[in-house]
Length: 330
Ligand SMILES: Nc1nc2c(ncn2[C@@H]2O[C@H](COP(=O)(O)OP(=O)(O)O)[C@@H](O)[C@H]2O)c(=O)[nH]1
Ligand SMILES: [Mg+2]
Image 1 (spheres, rainbow, N blue to C red):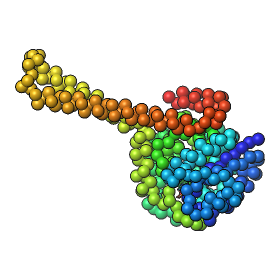
Image 2 (tube, protein in one colour):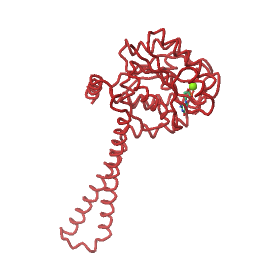
Image 3 (tube, protein in one colour):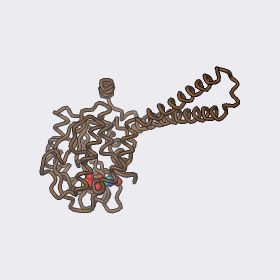
Image 4 (spheres, rainbow, N blue to C red):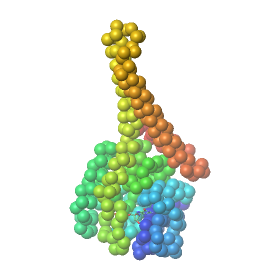
């Protein structure tokens, strides 16, 4: 009995949510899914929740910490249904679900993709309205940073529809709360999953306001620190800085000894010795700060994994496949 779970994040989408749920359900029925679960992850103050429930969806509280945490919760919760495929679709009706969902599902079920992303710029004419210049440039910058980090050749990261094999959601670890779209791609690539991009049309919003792409410059501001943290460069930098300072202190100490003909009567060199002590202290601080950061990162990863209770951890064959991917990706 093939099961599909669709995660729909919503923030004040009362005008569109019922129609989106209906469109998703009828389109998946055509694709012969017997069990279709719609999981709305909601942070609304309007009637989105009631309307989603009336349309037959399960509604999960988003947590009020941005799209990233809402999607994280939704994707992890989707695993409880033991799905064959997970999709995520925006709840604002900007995606042409009926026309496109089949291609996204097929890329996973027949094309061997693990994570399929919608791109509004892969072909011309996909964006059905005048898209603000600043956002176009911002999206370019974001996609460029993402491609540099992942080695992929994406044209967009913000499409309104995605499909994935459940193990991508199961393995997902995130640092940021607002950087869902980029971080999920980086995470999937790090774990050796096959990421594929398909063209996807983008309609104009009929109701409400865009929040994510509505503020691309602010979005970049949120994304940069996360990209930096995920790269792990900050830890390497701290280790290197710590070791360099300590190394420099030792060199300077030997230089002083050399100047004093290796005599240990160094009372008159107090300023130099104080400097050496300070360098060693600072070096140790940097080094241990790096160790602490590494520990915190590891604990965060363990907590992320622990959030999925054991019965939901999937078949051992699936876990073995993931491990192999990790290994071949090293
Ligand atoms: N749960 C939740 N959903 C959100 C949040 N921010 C945006 N969304 C939803 O995520 C989807 C995409 O958001 P939108 O603002 O349209 O982004 P854009 O189309 O990329 O500009 C929509 O369905 C929104 O309702 C949030 O903070 N929490
Ligand atoms: Mg939108």
